Image (cartoon, rainbow, N blue to C red; front, side, top):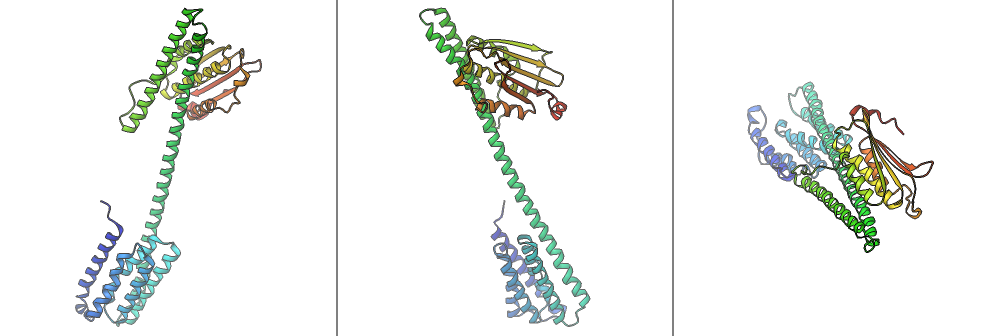
Length: 384
């Protein structure tokens, strides 16, 4: 259990006073005057103020040393009251800047030498050595403690800042996931709802097919939202990842069929031997294709689109291009929308590169390249 500083310092002060009193009773055996009422009072004045050392270290140090000087001047055994001043110097060194604490250590050295000068039969060489050695050692320990505390506070600040950044990144990731799920599926639903309303009486079969697409798309959207909520709940409760798998490249065909049902002529091409990739890589590629096709639905509903998936030895590349037909100029973004920002952030997160922009012969293209190995990730992508 963590002890409050005042309680701990009070306990230390009581312990030091007790030790000094017990040691003072040995004064006569060591050839020094016995402690009388005045001597015990000075012992208390040297040791009891230690109880406030954490709150007012400089005041305590000066009080302790003044009482110690009075005690030594009265002719009592100096050794009895050395522990309080030592702890006071250590406290100042641990809590105050080095310049201040060095002055306090020098004060202790001066009082120590003074005690040697006023005491008969003192070996001054030994006294001076002790007066220099003990304060320096105590100051050094206190200084190291202060530096350690500063480093611990700095580490705590860095950990808090890292935690804040991680929370912000997690919120951004969740926002991108929600944007991708809602924007894509709602775009498909909107297009199909408009189609169903338009042909409801003239072509019941087409209207029925549109409503079926709406039903399937909304169900898939709900399932993805439930999966995200399970992820959040699992992380909050510490129960691990949910059972439902994240969308991956194997589900690109389903996405293409859904967009095709929304009125966009989409073709899917796969080059290279398909292989299992890291879940994060697959989710990144899936979401980029989803966002790109959503933009086609919203901005160019009459355009034809091509989705190309290429497996390379150390990379995987996905691209979505459209021919520009049926573009609605008022809906064309400037390249700074949340969806495009989300694409770039996803690519950056997994060490990939992404190109987004118009084609020279009309249309628009999104091309994402992701490394599938640590070596590729460190070298970067050579594609443009």
